[in-house]
Image (cartoon, rainbow, N blue to C red):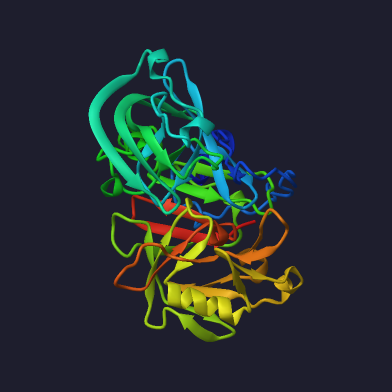
Length: 380
């Protein structure tokens, strides 16, 4: 068995291709405070129990983090390659970028795909629409070569937007969905599934490390897990049902008092959302308990009080995941502090939440398609 362990270690140390994520803010704001992530490669011991995947081709794609709003990474589409900044989104399943034929004002601020310049482009007549919490788009399905770092998907179906609404101030061109195929609005095979089916990745898993405070170092990794990015052991949580990245939450507490999910609830783990979202009544209760005052569309607190705010604790599969005040308080462009709790726009019959980047900056997350589960551990 010793040679198997050594082979696994070699896979993690010698076959890594980094693909960065970048955290981005709106076009109206300016970048500030970008520093290299310190000590991200801090040594942690490899333990056989931690090496849950036997893969030999771990691809790590760097992401860019800007102002705790979005995390984006670069991909290319076409031959020769045309580069786009996209959100790697576990809340959706479709890949799309703007078409050169899109005349919406939102498209004018983004890179457009010039399909006539790609020798591998194949059009279709299939159309689709997607409505997000922050905007909507209408597009057509096409096929071309998509590259994520060294990962290549030829004849990949994807969307070209011909209409976009409310995306003009967002510093990303499109979205690369990482949810299950049944969540695809275009009804085509998602990029991850095509790579998985063609065995371009060694294991059907991907994972996210999202850096804090505008530091660089955020990554999405495909085909395995690099254990330098988290502390301790991964805690595995089964999905509520296969086909969606949704977990069961035991309860949500503050100062030992249950403030939500008193009878249990569900929560989607969503890298495409920058906030923690929940039912309006319960979110309003949290805002009152932490003393936040509404102004416009946000709830504000004194920046001097951030370090004294209580932690909100999500108990998932028997494990507590605290979210301290310094994590759920963000700053707007004027330097004022507001909470990252928001009311869900989509009403559901059962109590449900969305755990976005505020939660995922604290906890390294592994999305295991092979076993329909999510692994969580404190991020370094």
